[in-house]
Structures are given as structure tokens and as C-alpha cells.
Length: 51
Image (tube, rainbow, N blue to C red; front, top):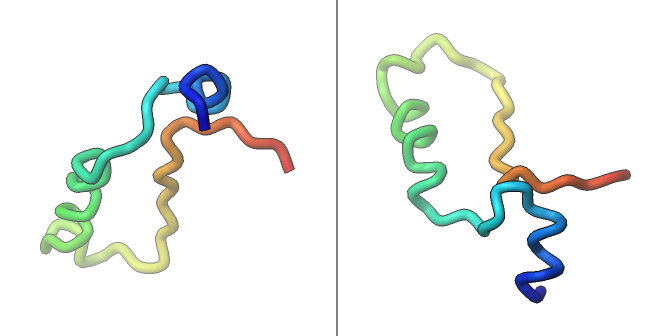
């Protein structure tokens, strides 16, 4: 994927890195999230897609 093509698909203008989801993973692994069950989260880099 060229940069020009990806700029039109990813609204944040860059691809993700592990640090982008580290906070979510840390929270879900903590006791603060002990009452969360069955939650879906989307880590999609702001991609715009049509189905």
C-alpha cells in the first residue's frame, strides 16, 4: 500500500503501533476492569470501510 493510497483510507494518517493499544490492554488486565464482561472494542486506526 502506498502512502498516498493509505492516506485516503486511514483518517489518522498513519498505521498503528503496539503502543496505540497498550493502554487498553493494560486496563483490561487490571482490577479496574474486573466487572467488564463480553465487551467488544474496535482498534481500527480510523479506517473508513464500506460493506
